[in-house]
Length: 93
Image (cartoon, rainbow, N blue to C red; front, side, top):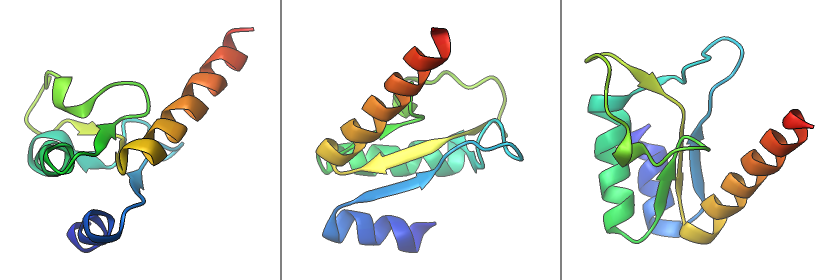
C-alpha cells in the first residue's frame, strides 16, 4: 500500500481499498494503516473517506478494526463520494 499511496501523493489520483463481498468491513486496519495514511493525505490537501464517512472521524471499536479506504486528490475523491451517495439513494428507492 505505501508504494501506491506515494504515487497518489506525487501525481494525484485516487488510492482505494473499498469494501467488497469478501471484506465487507474493508481490508486495511484503521489504527495502523488507514488513519496514518489519511492524516498524510489530508495534510497534503486531499480527502480520505470510507465512501460514506471521513476516516479521521471514525472512533475505533477495537485495535484491529478494518475499514474501507478511498483517498487522494480532493476533486477526484469527491467524485467517488458522489457515486456512493447516488448508489445509496438508488438503493433507498
